[in-house]
Length: 144
Image (cartoon, rainbow, N blue to C red):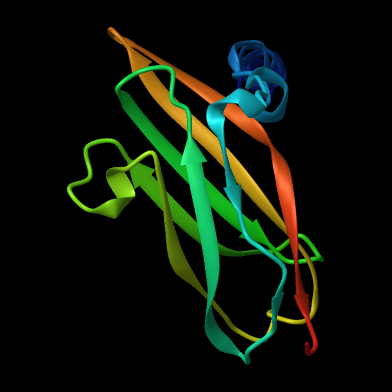
């Protein structure tokens, strides 16, 4: 009897405390700004199940310490590729602008409109800030 009473009081209380202390949804709390730069993927012809596609970037980070994460999503919303840039990287992925070829592989690579999502994390002093960019889009075409 005592066990039931304790559970009847403790479980709702713990759930309420957990809900009150839960962080806000990431989609609501992260600001959106196109001034942080852009990642462009031009419309291209689909090359097969696993091929490399052109990508260009140009970042405008607010500080010297920054990281950029890019996700490419299929027309159905599935993430099929991601890329990571960091200001401390010794190779081309540490530069604020450049080009590369990103592999897109798998049965989900079909003709259609793909979404490119970009997020920048940068540091000012001891504080870190996260900013999203509005998505860009590109098409994979059947043939030229």
